[in-house]
Length: 191
Image (cartoon, rainbow, N blue to C red; front, side, top):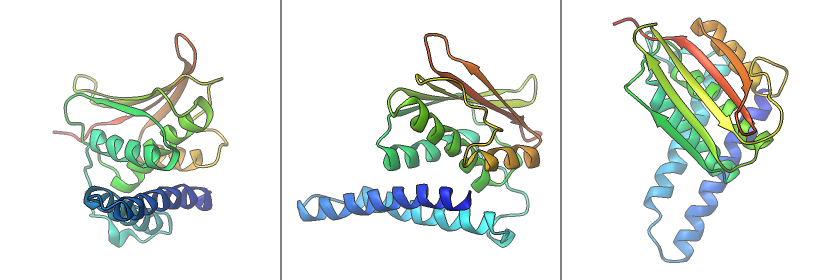
C-alpha cells in the first residue's frame, strides 16, 4: 500500500518536473511550477517519515486546518492525474491530527474519485460545524458505484488508519444525478 501512495506522489513530482523543464525550454517563467515541485518533494518526504514511523518530523500537538489540507490534496491529484478538482471551504476547521496523514487521507479519497469517477467534476466540500464540534469533508464525483472509504482499495487503508487515530469515521452514499459521495467526519480541535 505504501508503494501505491509513493507511486502516486512520485507521479505528481514527475509531472511538475516535466512542466518546469517545458516552461524553461519555452523561455517562460517556471517559478510557480518549481515551487509546486519543491512542495511535492517535501510532502513526499513527510509522508515517508510518517508512514515509516519517524514521529520526529511532526510536532507533538499538531492542529492542521482541514481546508488547507484539502487544497493541498486537490493540488497533488490535479497535477498527478490531470484532474479538475474544486474545493469549497467555510470557516477554518482545525483538528488534532497528523497534518501529513490528514492530507493523505483526503488525497486518497480525491484520487479514488479521479480513478473511479473520472478526472472531471470532482468536488470537495469542507463543512465545519461548531455546534456539533465536528468537521466533515465530502468528496463528490460523477462516476460509477460507491466505493467504501474504509474498504479494501489501495490507499484506503491509510484513510481508515488515520480516522481511527483521529477519532473519526467515514461514510459513502450515492450522489444525486449519478456518482458517489464519500465523507470523512472528525472532531474539531477544542477551543
